[in-house]
Length: 572
Image 1: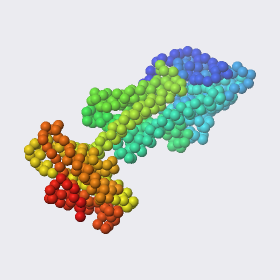
Image 2: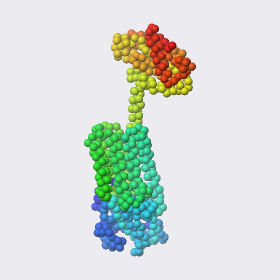
Image 3: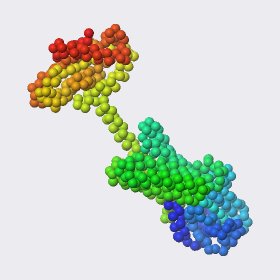
Image 4: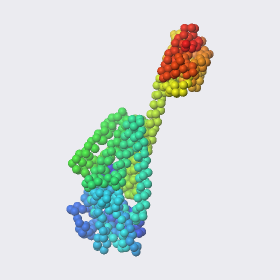
């Protein structure tokens, strides 16, 4: 769509000067009348109907070469005509619609036997309730009587003069509307769902790319609703003839700017492509400022050209950032390039279709932009989903390493506290027993002095493994510091803790170190403190009772060391 102005100009070079065909109904049930239409530009002032009829009779005229007649941006008004021949014996109702919502003024005259039977005036310059019918395009329904009816239309707009005129029987028109509603509903539904999900995700994880992605998709959906005319079935306030034109081009800013910042944030282009990153920043700043200046001076054409330039830069810079990311070997770069190139191709297809060049205009080519953007949105969502999973795994690993002793792979003090805190709360609420055991390797300093710290580390690993193997599944083991370990025993009285401590002591005592090529016999001293009938020192367990248990177990450990080592002592 960003290349619309250039493509429409090219279309003039290929428009032949031939005679249009008559549309025979009811044989012609539905379709576009572009190739049946003759037209001329109103270059020498405003014409009235009689003057236009003389001009049609005098020629020469241009005949449409495709389904959509496209003439450029801010061009002279155009007069068009085609003839409807009803070969039936009774009137046939048909709907005529110009499926470009931003056309400002459209007048249609229906003429039979030289007499004007009806004049229909509309366009987006009119409030919705003043249009020929409640429809997102200029449209009206008319029962064409048997014989010939000449249709003459005058079209004026400052926006792109793209005129895909549809002529359908009423039944076909209604079926087409229903089908189009389902298609748009599916496309918009996917994008809105992805947008809302990522906006919610942003509020939880506070990652900019999720918020920008959500804004990018919502911006595109609103912009699409605007330039397809659906938004203006609601927002049709009488703010002047060019309200919709201004709204359409400024809505381009929302998704273009959010989309470019999303891409540079996701791909982190600042780290490896600083020049391209600056170009993106300046593009998203200077072009919108220029559009605002055009609005301030009421220069629609200037702002419109900048809007198309911004849209073109959006497509080109998206692909450029993907290529740079691929060169920098960034993850997901290939998927990003595939998504952006697919969207660019679909935008080009839709633009060429509306411009009437190379690609036939129909419901599917007109919706190619939405299809391409939906496909892009799904691929980009897969990138964000993969990135989120990676981030979650990294977070889990970081939390694990923060709570784990890197040498013995037991919990460290932080891990011990995080694991035991919720257990202590349950013990307090249920009035259960609890105990702790402190373990210290006897004469460990001698091992380091004689064999070195590397052997000492291996000894610590083996002792940690022995402790973990001797403990029960519900017990929490941790390295408390140096050669000291701790075991937390939930739902265990002091007497049960003594039995478990003895198991640990024996497990350490029988540990073999033959694989270290040293003759080593190792023992440990243990101190135990616990509750009896859910009480410690005649007091019910409180939140700070665990710290008191550890202090008493530490004193008991000291007594075990002083009284000969390799034994279990219970706190008095």
